[in-house]
Length: 456
Image (cartoon, rainbow, N blue to C red; front, side, top):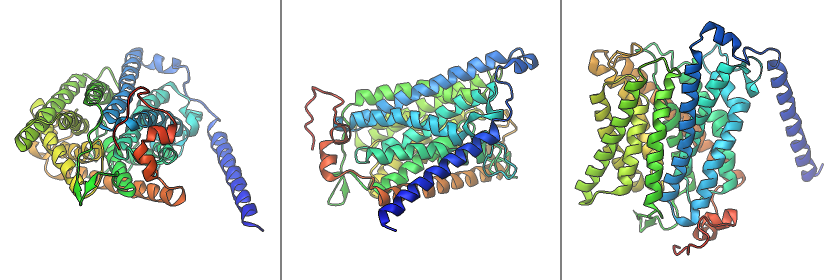
C-alpha cells in the first residue's frame, strides 16, 4: 500500500470515528430535557427573573471585555500586526463559544462521580437543554473566551494564524474546562479537606492563571521577536498606540464589575456591593502602585506599566473579592501593582518575550490573587477564613495546592500543545513575514490602510 493511500485511509477513518462519537454523544443525551421554557423554575421561585437578568447583564459586560483585550493588545503592539490581533480576539470568542458548547461545558459542569471530569451535557443537549443550564453556559463561555484571549498578547507579532486558530479551539474544549471542573464543577480541588477547600470566587486561577501560564508556554516555544534582544540584553519594542491601550484598560475595568459581581449568580446576593467596591479599590491601588514604583525606579511614571497595573489589580482581586474587607482589597492591589512590574522585568531578563505583559498580569498576579484568599478572607461570607483572621494555615494550604496544580496543568498542556503544533505545522512565521507584519503576510490587509508602516 502506498503512503498516500495510507494517509487517505487514516483521514477517512478519523472522520468516521468523529461522526461515530458525535452520534453516540447526541444519542446518549437527547433522550430527555429538563426545563427548556422555565415554567417549572418560575413556579418554584417567582423572583427568579431578577437573577436571570442580573447574570445575563453581567455576561454581556464580560463579553465587552473582549473589546478591551483587543484594544489593549493592539495598542501595546506595532501597527503592522493590529489587524491580526483584532481577528485573534474575534475568533477567540467565536471558536471558544463553539468548542465550549460541543464538549467544554460538559467536561466542566457535567455529572461526575470521581471529581475529575464531567461526562454529561455534550452539545448542550438532554438535561442540559434547560433555562438554568443555558444561563450558566452564557456566563461561563465569556469566561472561557477571556482565558483564551489572554494568550494572544503573550504570543503576539510572530505566531502563525492557523496555529493560533487551532489553539483557540483546544483551550475552550479541554484546557480551561477540565481545570475549571476541579474548582467550580464539584471537582477534587473544591473538595480538599483544608479550610473550605480550594476557593477561587471569580477566576484568578481558573481564568487568569490558566491563560497567563498557557501564554508563557507559547512564548517560550515561539522564542522572542526579531530585535527584542541585542547582545543578549532586552530592548523595548514600543507599541503603536498608548491611546488604544488606555481605552482597552478602561473597557476591561468596566467589564470587570460584571466579571466579579456576576459570579454571585444571583441578584439577591447583596454581597455584590462589597464585591464591586473591592474590585474597584484593588484596580485603583494597583494602578497607583505601578505608576509610583516606575516613577521612583526610572524617574518618570510609566504609562504602559500603570495601565497593566490596573489590570493586575483586577486579576488579583478576582479570587478574593467576595471574602475580604475594603482595606484588604487596597493592600492586594498595592502588592499586585508592584508585583506586575517586577514580573515584567523578570521575564524580560530571562528571555521570555511577552509583548503586552500578559504572563505577568494574568499569570503572576493570578497566583497572588489565589493566595490572598488564604490570607485575607475574613469569614463574613461562605465561612472562608484566612490566616490573618485566625483561620490557621488550612485555607492558605488549599490555595497553594490549587495554584500549584493550576500552573502545572496549564504549562504542561500548553507547552505540549504548542510543541506538537510546531512539529506538525510550524507555529512561527518566517523572518520575512515577521518583518513585513502579520497583517500583510497572514491576512493581506492593513489595520490602517493609509498609514505608512515605517518600522522594520
